[in-house]
Amino acid sequence: MTLAAYDLTGRTAFVTGAASGIGRASALLLAEAGATVHCADRDAPGLHETATLVKDQGGTAHTHHIDVADRAQVQQAVASCDRVDIMAAVAGIMHSSPVLETRDEDLDRVLSVNFRGVLHACQEAARAMIAQGVRGSIVTMASGAIDTGGPGLFCYSVSKAAVVQLTKTLATEVGAHGIRVNAVAPGWVRTPMTDHHGEKQARTEAFMARLSPLGRVGEPEDVAHAVLHLASDASGFTTGQILRPNGGVAMPW
Image (tube, rainbow, N blue to C red; front, side):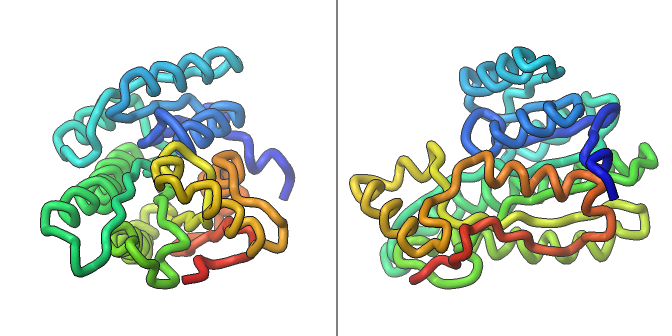
């Protein structure tokens, strides 16, 4: 095994949630490794900024202004790609409410993006890979919240647990086509999504940093490197697995 295993030259990657945070960092790193990157998000200005950053570093980027909760939009965007070697299904949202105060519409909204959006991306990518004869890699985005219950994180945790089961099941179904499916389950990462956590943000980050043997919280680039590993040939014998870049600590609730 050499560093050439991480070379994605000639491959095409589709990244959802690419307008910011882990999605943007993943798009930039996959492009740096040589992939042509298709960036998808419903945040048009952020999407344009990501594509500009990819091009500024010498990469090739295409943008798709879509909502991953809409199957037709995902289908059309993936179909517009010449080929799909890598799908990084990163798009996600967070909602905070205790179980007893969670409304049906709250759960539906989170599941529509965090689970069904990932499902749409996985289905369309796998179908394209099979039709094109591509031995590709699908990387989904779970969370450290899958391991423990967390106060106020019911909708988010349930959606990410569903992503894990999707990942494991799909891996068993498409492996015969040479397609690998794995998930990344980060610990606390400083992103625009977690910045919306409220006034407790600074205290939460300090608390999580104290729990980690590394003494810090994660950055989007930390997770992007996990995405690159699972997308590349370096993980060629890895499928149906959950990679946890969490600084050495699970969610401590």
